[in-house]
Amino acid sequence: MLMKWVSVLCAVALSQVVSPVLAANLASPVGTWEIEMRDSRYQVEMCGENEDQLCGTLIWLGNGADNEENLPYLNTLLIDHAPQVGENRWRGKLHIFGQTATGTITQVSDNRIELEGCVAFVLCRTYQLYRID
Image 1 (tube, rainbow, N blue to C red):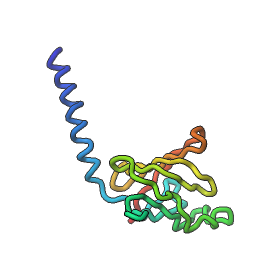
Image 2 (tube, rainbow, N blue to C red):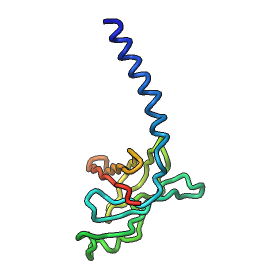
Image 3 (cartoon, one colour):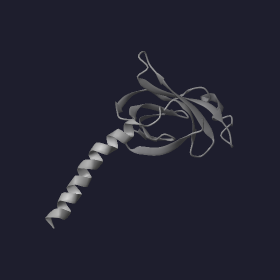
Image 4 (cartoon, rainbow, N blue to C red):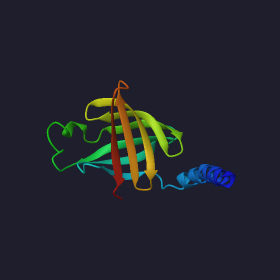
């Protein structure tokens, strides 16, 4: 029984050491990303005075989203100068078709970003972006 617990503790300790190393090896978030509904694309780049913040601009609308209601948001910021708060993680303002939310941007893998935005800490929604470069 003791050996089983030692094995479990070793596995947990190893995962704490390996996970940050793997996370640090992700590709840069800079590039072109498409939202999971496949109706909008965003150019993500480093921005700010020291290029230490994340910005994402709506650059394309299609598949029904390219309508009168959404076209005014073309070439506007979705991710608005979000500072990095952890490994592959940024926090800041998200502008989603006229709504501003506090959001967390997490690069989950080389080719997937997760956006979680909350308005008034009550209404929350999560979106997936996939790299299309």
